[in-house]
Image (cartoon, rainbow, N blue to C red; front, side, top):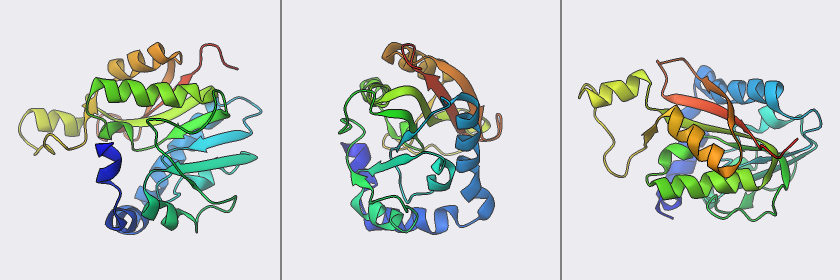
Length: 210
């Protein structure tokens, strides 16, 4: 898949492991929100957690309460950088378009900084369907919110867009509809900074789950 090939090089791995989140405040934002959403919505006995894509392993501390954590990414160099962060076994190589797990394999599935790379509606449906399929109860995922100030600046021509292969803004309604069709209605949206930040998280609970 093109979205996975885009981040398949060692340069991307070095960037994410180093300069991209070198600032302590930037490094802590995603784990803080993931931890808060899990505290509010994860089932009491959430022993099995999937982190996909795991990138350089930044979310490992936020998921440390789970008895079994599985970290997966399609980027082999990124997986190599993640090993230092992951003390509970080697991360796995795999695609979010076809997760190598049976249905309901995990209590919670976390997918950070991936959905905004998906361009077509069919790609979004496929990945959301896979995230929900392998979750027994909860999915936590991030996306770029089209109602954010950065998205508005792009629409007004005040900020340069990333072009046809760049990252994609989507509305909360579109994400809510995609997760609802997959069988996991969204129960909360959690922006990093309301309106100011384009990065927004959601928590979706399987309608037939715990």
